[in-house]
Length: 412
Ligand code: F6P
Image (cartoon, rainbow, N blue to C red; front, side):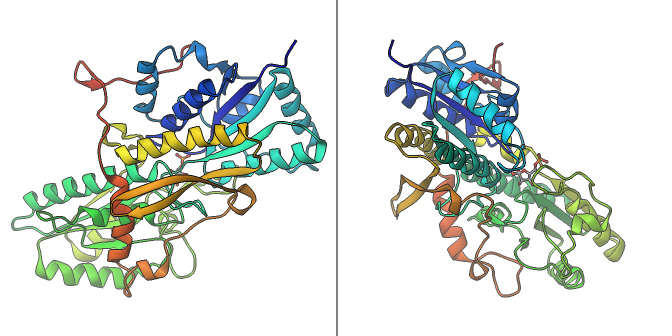
């Protein structure tokens, strides 16, 4: 009997509002290319080790389901933050993974994730080559942080940037309306860990009818609390209300995260990342005590990565494209690689899928170049804005049911 051509896909790391569009791209392309079964691992490689997976044809029944999946935020299959041990540390884990893959007759393993997740693709593809296993391992980029190397940008970033810029405009309107005889300082905290791409995207809020944020602080530039206080006080002499965007990961010159000045969280994930939260609250309390003005902290938190009602059409389409491109690459014999997005032109904006060695991507962080931040270190430049602007274009309307967006959810 001919060997079955099966494929398995997983999602890993922090979710985005378009990660499921990549999953839809994997599923549709795998079916078009004649794969027999498309399995989805539940909660990434961590769940796979517990033999948690589904046959995706039991979940996706029609083109309508594919469309719904593309509009569904968070990881449809469930995600994980799980670091595979090095091969010599725990060979049994690798033997287990490959025995499950063999049992399911898997030909290609596709993992949708960020730089930590690409570590899994790197390790599994290396192991397969050394041990002579035939399976192909391909990565699909995903992260709102936009910190993956060698790709122009990452799926998930454009939609988060669009939501953040929109929210910044809305927060500015709210603050302007309330500051009549009283001064007001609003601090917005944006995700991105050590990369300031998303925080910089608040600059897109500066439009014909909106002044945009007054100050923007990225983690790439050391943060000086005293200079910050002086800057805010000077600005408040000229206007009643200021809005400041800060990255969750800003650090003082000695390398301390600002959020840790107030204690912060002790939680550290499997990749050694400390949970970052509380930067805006700390700064709002600090400014209130130093200036006596009213302050407010706005932490966008998970909203920025799950706001699929505000997704960018460019982002949804690219997320779908890279999912499909990974299946095609694996089917054509590639392994140990990640699909990348190449910017083909800016005006009109066009992109295409490329492919790169995952060893050059895993565990790396692509930061905002220093020359895309102004000299004072408190705003981004026009080059930064020109880079992000095409990625937030267009929308992808949710299917509304009884006034709310409808999602596709896993049925077991
Ligand atoms: O990796 C994406 C990301 O959204 C980061 O920007 C953020 O620091 C982190 O995830 C938060 O992760 P969690 O929700 O697991 O605390």
